Image (cartoon, rainbow, N blue to C red):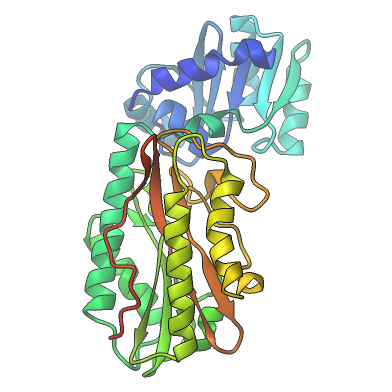
Length: 358
């Protein structure tokens, strides 16, 4: 990963932001700019260079992972060494991540940083993260491959009556790890029968029965990058209404994917899929946005929703995930990660989206 190039892009924004430096404290952003993977680290990026700060647990790790920045290990918190570094760089106005600095930390910074103005910033690093480079796309692909293999091994080849939602979720996690995942992208959603009417359902001890619809939302993490997919299958022939709903959702999914391309507006992509669902009479049962960006976080920009104004850049990876949820009956969602290209959307998962009846 070319972290220096990424930091250069942020440094180029400093004049427009009217600050002399930026303090980065949110860990996904710290990782994006420095390569640091630990649980405590901060980065200062100034016009004349930068510095990385962490505590004694990560001195050696940061030596390996953050080779191209000055590094400081602290024992009593980072505000004091941070301010000393700011003074060395001649910082008069320090930007900080408003979403990553608590009021308590802000007060500590203010107490130490006499003569330095603290300026809140919104989403500067996050916006840089929207467009993925080749290495990021490769990691996303590996994370998706682990999820695809788990779906085939555990669901298509292993779904059985009597297993519980919790058992299926655990089996998927184990299979993803065996396929090369370093961990879960998020807690797996496994929902059987009427439970599938909940868009986000915590797995329970409900056993799987013949005729149940099975909705699965899961993903793997590889190299810090996440995958996210949803598939809906059935054990035995499901209720005919759910077959009809699956057809509607599949058509909406295709319409959403077809609307993805460089420069597309998020609201227009959402509308392309939502129109299909509304024309079929299920508009009130599609209760969430169409999708979101995926990368170092499972939910990041750009966001695809009916009132969204985000414009998709080439290289962004977004989910397309229409769903219809009928209380007391069940629900259907189909979700894929899609790379944004000038020629349209490139669907990353290879698993079938059909309503497979097992």
